[in-house]
Image (cartoon, rainbow, N blue to C red; front, side, top):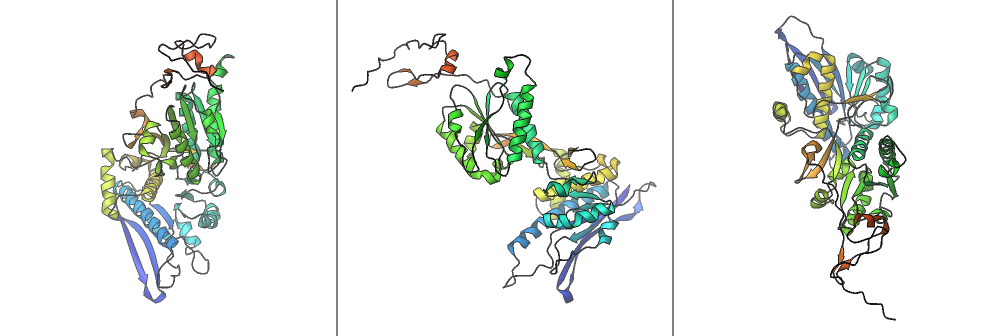
Length: 452
């Protein structure tokens, strides 16, 4: 086993007022076995913006500052992963490059940097991915993307791996769950036709396909109904109120995200106004971070969302990895550091499969899938979580939602049953005859005829 030491250094060239940040790794000369292991060479492109001009007063643009923070988080994740691979006997050489062009718009890395690498990680910014992607393809290098990119930047062959969890896969998994657990309930999808129209279409397609697969005779199409949709917008829920009833369970689905925050605010108001009805709500992952959605309401609605792979704090086998990251970065890993760590660790394990026994990811094993033959690989690691006890809990730890029990509502003024719509009267044989004729309610007061 070869020991591995990761070293990060920053060199400041005062004459040119340029900060060059690089990182490399080299194996210790002491080997514990005689089996040679090929060195994994990484080129990591991150947006440090070392040549970005400052504003008046010596301040950097806010965007540059934020990109540097993200770049440092990713770098700490890479460093922690490389340390683990080194301890597992996988020598890794890392070159960290600034993806931000210089003041003349020229890249700060050369073709030689990419040619020496086995795997290129990054860039993070879309405009920089567009520039570097043809060069990587020409050299036949593996390419790991840490940020969401348009399809034309990803679908370039099996050498590309998009580490950001693929949203469409999360929505399809949600549709399978809803169809399995609510196949005889009325399921209503609020359609916004906004930025997330593809997700809405995917949910409807998968849900309806699952329902149709259950049709064995003519009556099954009524029992296993297809998806009911309400046409809303990014700011409203449309005529959702007309689809809500207190006499059956209301399963409401919305797979629009951050761009439809106003719709989610309107949905919350609509459901609060119908507090006598029973709701189960399924939502886009970003709803979990919308602070205006109240926690007690989320719990009452059994709000369920697909969440991407997250740090498994409760898993004691990962504590050593997390403790090591704290030593490296001085803080807990954020989502950028976590994704970079696990993506580099995954690349190392693919390079040396035996190392899988000696390394531990933060989020768990990544689930990769190709959407077309000889196409790019997409990370489809999603977990369904329900809000309960002020926390997002795994569905396999939650009790089953009890069956819906329809009930009558009494008007306190006349102490009589509030009229039930005809299609639900068969549910209440104590109040209605088989033909729907009302049965006098015991103790009901006589209704007074309206006066002219």
